[in-house]
Length: 452
Image 1 (cartoon, rainbow, N blue to C red):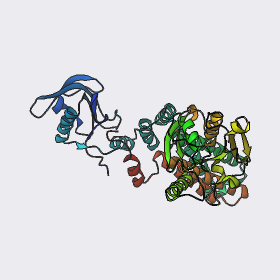
Image 2 (image 1 turned 135 degrees about the vertical axis):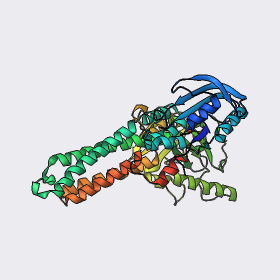
Image 3 (image 1 turned 90 degrees about the vertical axis):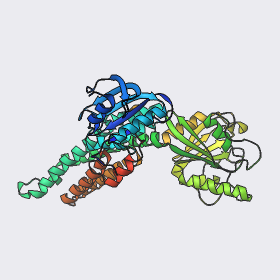
């Protein structure tokens, strides 16, 4: 676990050769380390071009030294950043010299952890740092930056403040019944809880999109042999990944490709054709396919239109077992060009049916739009970068507020309403770190890169 009373140091740039390498130091020993290595005390928030000296007063390198005096720094502690030439040998010598002067090598995420402890950032902002670094698209990067700048935390804290205000009023009414404040008859309380539900639901939807941008959506292409699954993978990927032949059973293993649709990352998986009779090798491919289907966010059920135009998943699924839930399924009627139909989209209830030609790409844009809407895609400006734990916390809060609204409606007792609102507040507080276990903190920050 991290020790907050030590001075830490780490390389803040990727290892390897580069034009510039940055070493970051944070803690009480920074003034001593700076004076020893630089041979002078640097002025705060001023870029010094200077030499870096070893224990024998021999120059290790020349570069830029930046000193940030506590509490006006990223971590809230004294920070020294040395920008040297990006050769691994030079940086190793310089880092070893800093450690010899009393610093310890930083753990992954330890700088951000100290910033969190010193109230420079909250937990959601700390996670946004890691998400910004690992962003795989421009939309994801912009969304992570929005969260890093505090927009996500601001909205969550606003909900927490509203819950606290509601609890204060309700608990006062319970504690001082002689004052004749009957909250059950006050329409404003019901209105506020109803409004809270609507706005919390909107944040949940925006956070869902943020989670997709961060983690990606897993989409599995499934169906009988020769339905056109590999051709569809090639169209979505924009290149020839899978072998396409008229021979049934060509694909015998799982093929994966990572793509983006309007900034939304998708993990597209092509699987072996599902059929009852197959040789030993193909059976193993089918077993792997079924495992991927179970874990998928969406399943593209490929159908050869020359064989069937059914829109019933139970009829189209190649076997009697393992049919996915209907809310996961998108039916793809492939090869519509061979039966004289045009690409289009229709629905069987809530199940989309996309008619296309995977061979020539006609109708692929319809499928992309369905995939976007399937996961609640909204424009990047309204997206809040979120993690699975954030979604769980917001959903938990929504559930408790809904129970509170139900209790109010049934006039079952104010103490139950107040308790549900408290539980909702605790759930939201776990997002920003105001109510978070040490184990969770360790798990979150240990996933960061060293030097951040």
